[in-house]
Image 1 (tube, rainbow over the protein chains, first blue to last red):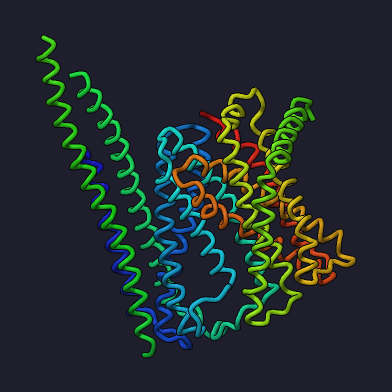
Image 2 (image 1 turned 90 degrees about the vertical axis):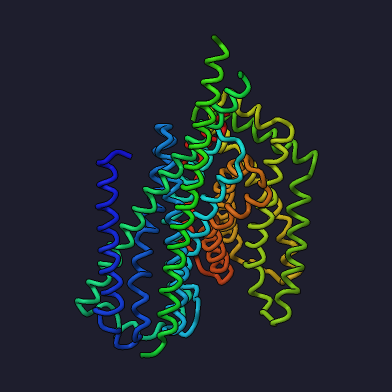
Length: 235
Length: 55
Length: 224
């Protein structure tokens, strides 16, 4: 790494840590507790904060996959794949924190509500996308096939969304208590939410950059291995 | 101040998942760099051997 | 329509259907599997006394989903076994038309299996389409086409993996959720005597989008 890159890296990391500290502070201390839900509502800041990077990552998978198939540049494949992994990590956060919030608020861990269902289905789709690569032995096909699956998965996203929405309108889900009275009203709550969004977006970008570096080194390692084998045979 | 247990478990879960992800990235990176270093020294060795053998 | 497209379509269809007539592989796996599924459905829903008139839609779509998955896997596997897929890669035909032909033949096979299932539904679950036959047929055709349009792409992707038998359903089924939701909703509404225009539009949209995606992407699947 050059000195300049290292400096940018350090500044980014400092910013990430500062924003993260503020986000935690606001979410846990400064923002007032929700009138109806009480302190559990504080889960919500980071719950929403993880949905945003997850969605962004999933759309990036679609974009990167198309870009790879069109240009055949490996960098797009790496970016798309790591975006899939990062999206999966934040998607897992959404799926873990959701039920923990729902239990004290709705009284149940899970309901087949449009938001929950679509998140689960998206998570499963992208789990398949990330898994696929480990099971392809032929390295020449790996990038192409995962790009195709990335497109197939990414294109399905709006349909998953629409179908679960419509599904819900026909089958009313259990009454969600406290939705009218509570919610984001206090300006400090808005601040907390914005900070959580910013913090997790920065964190997602950080993970993404590190992940891409990792895939790069992996590709380099494979090349070195081939070179070593080559040399060993010829010596 | 009710349901603090849920709040605590949610935040614990968030940080556990994130640190797990970060630790995985970091460990894998370490391992890859180690292997790359090893291979590079090995390649240098082999190349010098081949260079001296050819002369 | 250009004539090479038609000839590709014709040739592929003839090939797939003749092979199926000879081996009856898909018929055996999909149809018998579906019958077993329906029996399982009966036992699974008898315990909690689920009203029998609710079962047909559910049973029908679970059968489409699972026996369809089985069938797609089988057709593609036999294609690989005989080196047929390699020949397709080398064939001087446009990949998009090959994809559409495969979708058509897969949809025909699945549709045929389904036709055989209807009498069994009538027998087991007092299934009675009544006057809703035409809308019901439309829902099923759109649903099957959507299912196959997605599945034909995915099966060709997962066929290149080490555990394609397991990976195919795992990767494909989440992608089929919109088709499943729309298909069951449309079917149920038809049975209740309503016209599910919204869901038909939705299914048409999925079909249009997926058939065009497959048409464009299949070329990359046939690369060596």
